[in-house]
Image (cartoon, rainbow, N blue to C red; front, side, top):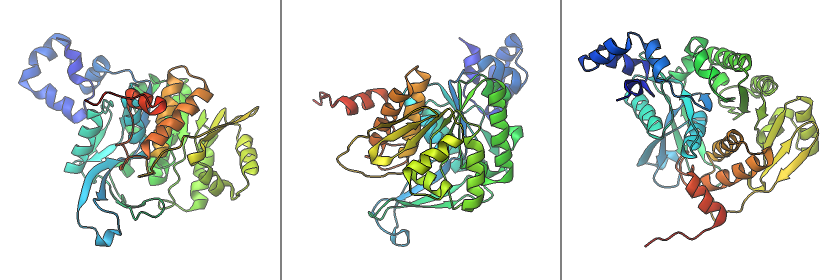
Length: 361
C-alpha cells in the first residue's frame, strides 16, 4: 500500500486527525510523518492548474417565479473558481482549488462535493468563527436569473496572504483567478496580489476572468481592481458587457483599442451566442459561437467557457482551437439548470460537438 496516498486531497484538519489516530501509528513510524507539512510533501498531487476563491451554498426554487413566492428549493453550491475547477476536472485536467469555508454543514457539503468531482481540496482552510456564504437564485423566465448573495463576513472573505502555499502555486502551469475574490475584502485583495506575485516568481502563467460583481463594490473601485489585475495576467477573459462597463463605451472598436493598450499577451472577449474574439497586439480574430435549441440557465456559462479554454491550452492547443472548444463548453452549460450541472465530460462534449448518435437501448 502507498501510505502517502492517505494524505492526498485532505485538509489540514483531516490530516491532524489521521496523525493522531492509532490506525496510522505504523505509517508515522515507518515514514517519519509527524507534521502536516511532511504529509503534504509526500502526498502532494501535482496540479496543472490551481485556483482559489469563495464557494457558497446555492438554493434554487423548484419553480420559476419571484423568491417571495417560492417555497421549495433545491440545494447545491456555486462559485466561479470552483465551477472552473470542476469543469477542468471533468475534462481530465489535474486541478486544485482552495478557499476558506465555515466549520458548518454547508462548508462540509461544499468541500465534499468538490472533492467528489476529482478536484484537489487539500489546501482548503476551515474557519471556526466565520460561516460559509449562502446565495439564492431567482429564475423568472425573463432575462438572466437574479442572484441574491449573503456573504458579508463569510469565511472566504477572511482569506489572507498567509493562506497561500508557495510550493502549491509553484508546481502549477497556470494560476486562475477572478475579480470576485479581491472585491470580497481588503485581505482578499492582498491575497490575490500575493498569489499573482508568487506565480510570476516561479514562471506560472496567470489567467484572469474579471467576473464583475457590482453588488460587492462600486464600479469605480471595481474598475481599478480589474484593470490592475488584467495588466498582470497572461490570459484575460472578459465578457463584452464587462468591457463596456470598464471603458464606458458601446463601441466595439474602441473597446478593442482599449484592451490592446493594456499590453496583455492574450485577451479572449466572450460575445455570448456570437462566440468570442481573440485579441492581441498583432491580430484580432472572431470565433463563431454555437447555436443551441433551448437556453435554460446562463449562469455558469462563462465559467464553462474558461474551463474549456484552459483545458485546451494545457493540452497544447492553439489559442484559436482553445477558443472554439471554450465556445462549445459554454454552449453546453446553458442547456442545464445550475452552476455546475451542465459542465461536460470529454465524452459529453464530443457528442455535443459531433452530434454522434449514442445507443440508448
